[in-house]
Image (cartoon, rainbow, N blue to C red):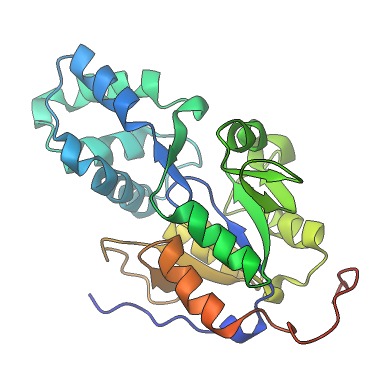
Length: 252
């Protein structure tokens, strides 16, 4: 499939990061152990592919945010689980896919976030979660507000704290407000075409979908294979206004 070209990058000053599918995937040891204990057949080599096919199924079904029924079914189909084991596999995954499971780093994602920060892009996190995503990211040395082992972000917008979930405009607007930027100066990147890219576009942000398998049919937003891929596009041009003196962020 031909990928939609990234556009509107010249005004970007900040990047809002989804967590799942951008920075991390669920701990694959935990997934394998849970499925094996339930006697479910699977191909572990396809687990990463399984995440993105599962998210494509979530998009296709327009699932309620954080209801993982469609995700579990899509994942199991992608990793070769026989049809007569899918219900058993879904029950096993329901016990494993807790918020604590989402911490296995995607190769290159942390370096890509640091490249963005080093190039002058301000960073934020915008995640559908349960109120614990900031602590989870800090605990695993992935990202945090202020000093720490991970990449420094200025804002963490967690649906469990805010009380609404992506694609609700309030999620994206809270991130823009926290950054002190108009939405058009923020790019949001996530692994959901509907929840992330289109949700962001609806408030005026640049929306980008991490779709390494090239399965998203929506040509209204741009697609990248990974955060590293996106960083390559953005770092090459630098943030909007990078040549101007930095001061307290203006609300424009």
